Length: 193
Image (cartoon, rainbow, N blue to C red; front, side, top):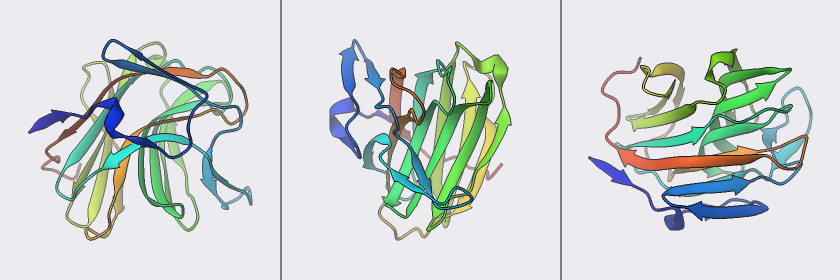
């Protein structure tokens, strides 16, 4: 099963400053200061990311494809999964200290953060995929048509209502604009890694 999600099916957690349909693409501009984080290390809570979400039933997967154009400190885009303001995950590309990184933040009351450098992804198309299977979510990502690589495996109660879709944040500047190319629901991955 592969089913395209229409951009109009989603609801924004926080409306961005600009949204334009361009053919099949959605071009989104983030508000300066937008972010998603809870407490850990920094002591603050940010819950004003721009995430366009629709339900993600158990036993399905979601994919988001976007252009990698992040170029200033903490610019980020990818896939957001949300149960509540205290239980969510963001996974994708973030520009940190002059380098693009592929990573994830998993939050259950408090946020954590894992990432690794992918400078060679600049200017290309990234796909982030989350498979919801059993009591877990497996996050994978790739650039262009390269093989998917494992990003994160984390537990999630299969009874929880989960919403997912594309997101972006611009914690330190105005003007971050990201072109999202595709949002699809599909079958979950059969393997964990």
